[in-house]
Length: 321
Ligand code: TXA
Ligand code: MG
Image (cartoon, rainbow, N blue to C red):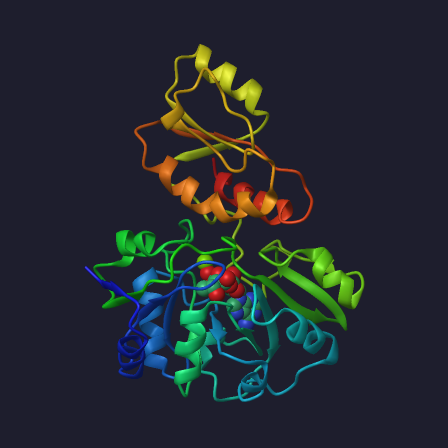
């Protein structure tokens, strides 16, 4: 199994040797490698069983270092970077040739982000290369928000997990780029649309893989537990499946269901706080996925603020059912 610890020097040494290290960020844990070393990047794809057509985000410690990797930084995106980095924002920018093809899957733009986590910030500052890092989960499964999640699924394949505690945001970064001069969101995430719009005006949202071949990783069926996840009106679903004598677990926003055993249900936020719900979402999906039940019943949250990104994840997790 992987060693788990907080040793930045050890993480740095492994990364310099081209090894993989799991790193904490405020969004989810990443599976990191030297982004400028094609062999190291290739082992990310192997370890995750990720198709090579799905490009990676590179991580660095400051806005000023980003210019080493990109050939242009349009003003409207720079405004966002200055306001929200470090933070849950990824920008698609024209890449320089130092970025290997494998990182961008041959696309002209590279995805860049400055994450907001003290351990990873210090690690990035100590390195003379950026880190390519997808979420540290097997391709298609729920993203990890704790070191133990990474250990459980990838621990036998990597030497070290840098333990930064529980991820504070809990949803992946919001991915933004320019399309015909318009600020465009390709993945809803931990930075809310209203935060973007307060600085650059109305943005367009294009989060479907079919209309968005530029981000092939945004597959319809993604972030998925192994158990079937059914989305709908929870009152109706619970009484329907209860009558049929099915074994199920419940993932609700606020409601506690008296007729469901307490160890088979999780409320994302009893007080109805969307930030708390986002922070708990992936850990809750994992916990219920590990129960001896046939399927998981869940519901959409209010379509506002982080609720939009949460609903996007729930929708993808239920796709294919
Ligand atoms: O919060 C996050 O963004 C986390 C942490 C670790 O930083 N990372 C993450 O990476 O979620 P990943 O690989 O699981 O998701 C990255 C998404 C994929 O859907 C990929 O297709 C898209 O970003 N992407 C990456 N590079 C791209 C590019 N050049 N053009 C379009 N989409 C890109
Ligand atoms: Mg991912």
